[in-house]
Length: 124
Length: 175
Image (cartoon, rainbow over all chains, first blue to last red; front, side, top):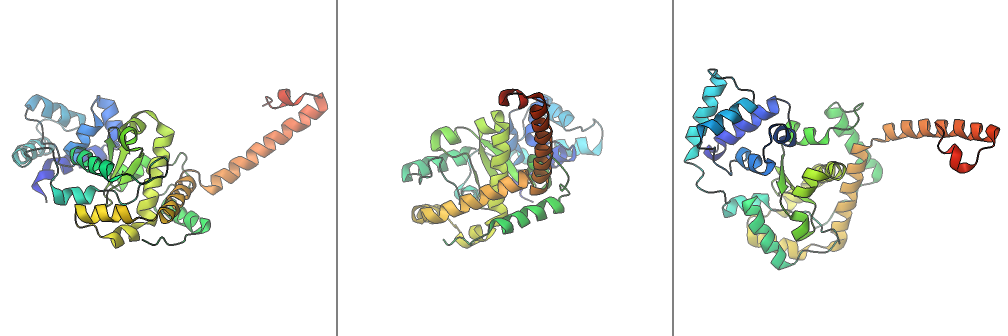
């Protein structure tokens, strides 16, 4: 398992086990789907604040004192040092590039816009 | 890049297979977001200003693991969001061969591919994905049932209107 997604994979699995889509989960608990998605994909490190981690754990339906609760915090701790920044490296960007897309006018995107798109993908 | 021809019937058959596989043959509305996010575990990622900056509603990553979707669409336009998800799922289902064929190893490969893409072939891909999305979200069997119900109800209205000598504007309001 990729150490960067040690926490994110667990987070996502628990959300899915609760039967919620990312959008539903974020709407229910007033969270930003872009940020939670980054957390789940291992692009954001787990929060350092234990208060915030506890609230995430409770949103995911984890109960204090259970093995799941402990594992959630263990994974967060193990993962924290693995994600130094929220920017993708080149080999990872390639996996995230689009192959098929069309603009609304059906025209090709210019080389300049493609370069901007790559920069945006790195951060999204 | 050569796009394989797919007839409307072939695309319909593919959507039928999907609905059957995931047990949505008698479900309306088709829970497209749940299917993609929770069951297939494809990441659905809101992308700020994707439309505003690039005029793109959505795209699927080359590893087919992530669908990026314009954040405004994701947040505010539910019907279009559902259709866009189904459209991207169409690319994933119908055009997997193409993603494998393209083999992008680096940014340079990708830039070259983007520059060489044939517009006509691209249009074919989009039409196929649009047909897939429509047929997945509005399966023919449901559409046929609704069509018959609507025709029957209209027929009743026509008869009442004829008997009561109603004007057209009035009988269209009859229920």
